[in-house]
Amino acid sequence: MMIVADAIADIKDALKDVDEDSLVIFDCDDVLTTLREHIWKRQNHAFFLKWCAENIPEGKNLPYDVADFILVSSENFLVDAEMPSIIESLYSGGIKAVVLTALSTKPIGEITDPLGWRVMMLKKLGYDFGKFWPSLPNKYFDEFGCEYPPMYGSGVICSCDISKGEVMEAFLRHFNVNPLKVVFIDDKKESVESVAASCHRIGIECAGIQYLGADKVVSQVPFSKKMMTYQLQMLKEKNVWIPDAEAASHRAGNFSPEEGQHFPRLVADA
Image (cartoon, rainbow, N blue to C red; front, side, top):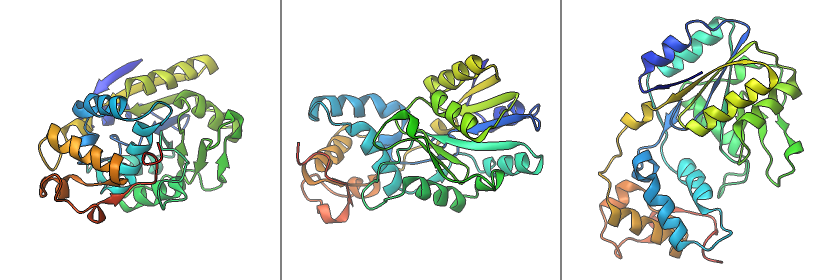
């Protein structure tokens, strides 16, 4: 079962029937937290991918890496102010919850521990998923055979570029977690379908929710094709990300690269 929801009331309704035999899994980006950068918005995603396809050599995983870099170099906000209290209510009711995010474990610029950064950022915004799992140690899921494997730590699972359903299964299997029901909340339909398929395969009831609440959080500046092209060109040519606020206040060509957020060298050596 999958429903599409765009209001926090829908999330509350979906969680009314969970109990101690349930596991509630939350995506992070655009479910718990979001950015106001216009490049992050769903309606602008096609333009971003098109630009990357036309400007970045094959073999570069730039869209994925750029997204992670923009994420860690920008200010994160709550999608909805009520969400931390919803998480707290689950904890008070003895119901387990965990974060399953696509964030990579690959170092991002000066951030050598992306999972640790994620945990810290969530705590700053009022989320503490580690207390749901006080005895679980950090764990790399090396069975996927990748250079930067999925990882669990402090109530957060980084799935990297592995399907979320597969990584959820690895988490359940390794830590012997056996819920009768999983409620999974993500903004991407394909992620909800991935987790639902895995639950079906291993015999767990699944309620999937595609949550689109972040679509209501507007960018700080209106979308500008010219401005986004400028930001991406500066990234390609200077290895620097210029946030919306700065990009909007400077003319293209007059912006000092030192003022932006520096990006690790993924493009200049192409």
